[in-house]
Amino acid sequence: MMGADEKGYFTEGNSVEVVTGRNAGAKDERLKEVMDVITRKLHEAVKELEPTQEEWMQAILFLTRTGQMCNEWRQEFILLSDVLGVSMLVDAINNRKPSGASESTVLGPFHVADAPELPMGANICLDSKGEDMVIEGRILDTEGKPIANAVIDVWQANDEGFYDVQQKGIQPDFNLRGIFRTGPNGHYWFRAVKPKYYPIPDDGPVGQLLGHLGRHPYRPAHLHYIISADGFETLTTHIFDPDDPYIHSDAVFGVKKSLLAKFNRVNDPGRAKRYEFAGDFWEVAHNFVLARSRT
Ligand code: BEZ
Ligand code: FE
Image (cartoon, rainbow, N blue to C red; front, top):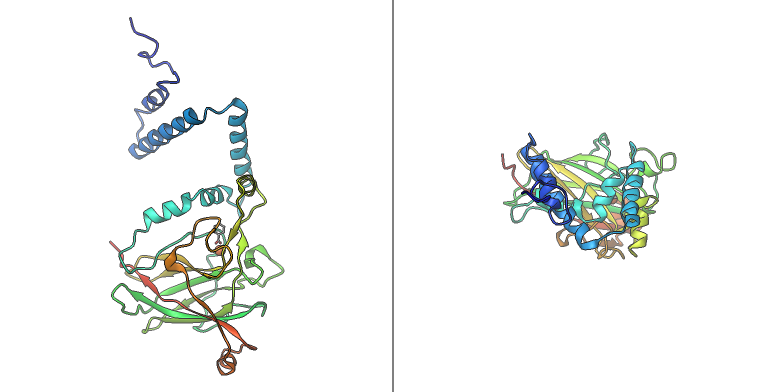
């Protein structure tokens, strides 16, 4: 006579096999693989943690609040993925670069698709607030040759740690954003202001989770870049200020050694005048190396 287990009744011991077995007829092989792995790992976690009904309900309500926080401008699930290190892990798996190519990091929620294309050297700071900064470098291939016609989409927070889209009516539209295109020598330069560290949006369930875990919500000061060129893989990355107080504890784990760029303070009245800066300014030099498209 068959025992209950053999008939496939659910028990604590056979939970994974019963659930994954029920998915045996899935039409999408990848979905089946994903659900098999997730079921196995999730059941393993539940068996190890042995949550009470109240704890499980807390988890359900946390995920419910996370979903309820999402709207056209706010994606709380991506923030959750960011603070769990999953965004950086997916990024790493999908951006294994050849040696010498610049490394990628998270996109973040503050990119806007339609920033203006500006002449090389333009000042992306439209409200004259903050400490002046000039940034320059070259876009190169892995053999060190300049890439012409590379498109550099850059955006950053202001000196108080806010993006323009977080301060509509306070900052001008498209403040501290711009698109630049390299010429034959692959050189780029533009003027901006020194960015400041800022908290990721922390007024929702993800912020509460960080608080309960004794973690701060800050990202060290950085500039965002998306750099694209025909024949090359698009690079989504940042450069970071290595002297920032949060450089070793980025809330979303986005910092990599190769993305640290020295921010130098410059006292040179002649150069300041040429850049139309009032006095001392910051200078950053950073080259980006693009990997050739694999297709
Ligand atoms: C950002 O750098 O813009 C960012 C990245 C992840 C979460 C929140 C903000
Ligand atoms: Fe950012």
